[in-house]
Amino acid sequence: MGTPQVIVVGSYNQDYAWRIDRAPQAGETRRGEDFRSAAGGKGFNQAVACARQGVATVFIAALGDDAAGRTARELATADGIDARWLLRSDAATGSACIVVETGGQNRIIVALGANECLDVRFVQAQADAFATAHVLLAQLENNIEATRAALALARSHRLVRVLNPAPVHAQLDAALLADVDILTPNETEFALLLARLCAVDVDPDQLAAQDDARLHALARRLGVGTLVITLGAHGCFVSHADENRRGDALACYRLAAAPAKVIDTTGAGDAFSGALAAGLVRFAGQPFRVVIEHANRCAALATEGRGAASAMADYASVIARFGETRDH
Image 1: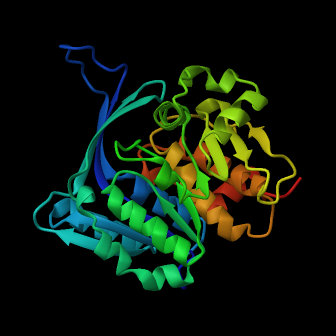
Image 2: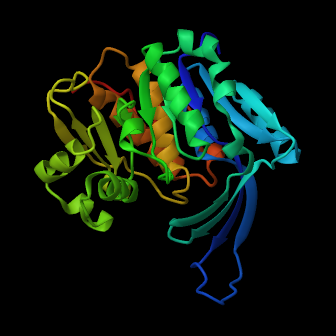
């Protein structure tokens, strides 16, 4: 794809997904309607989402030296991703159990395996990519010290640093968030961060119903320049620090979710974060709202397909469905 523009440091998991009418209760066995095994992991999903927006993407991750790891390498190549793999013979490739209910809601259990073996030295050895890229995107399905190292390297090369704080790591702290430019939590993750770092308790199920002033005030408590809280079917909420609104006229605003015929929500958040990172490159110089609108559309299309990485839409499909994204 050419000179790296976005670097994704993250996880690869082999997904094992069941479709079912409803999740079983404790001690209950239910008959599944369908089973699929496919590529996943928050990092890989986001790298695929980014690459499919036509932006040159480097993916840095760890794999087991096993069949799932070989599959990962083949899939990254097929999507044109410049993947930098740390191969581990002492750990299995990460895996995830996903149960998707008829209404599209999902429950996920992850065994991170080799993802937790991604080390600082390996990340630092990829400095050539950081020297030319514009954006770093990270999540928290890895050894958190590797994530810290990636953020520090990105800071030294003046990349825009985007963190999708999922899943919220036990060692995530204020120092790590201080190294982030854009944070993209969902409602649950936002509530967990407020409780841990600010001693503020909020009900994640009630966040979408809060007025903009209240949400903005809560977002400012975390001290990150820009927060984008993804609210599922309610779209998203953007909160900027006054000193850098990234070209937006308003310090805070909401965008409704783009229309979609939802089949499976598994990869929607990853589609959003990956497309956001790509949009910072593709829509450089335009207001941040343009980037977020495009990310919203990518997330909507991801819910119309099954699986995670496989459901990520390419740029042409997004434009064919919604038209060009423009500043209003």
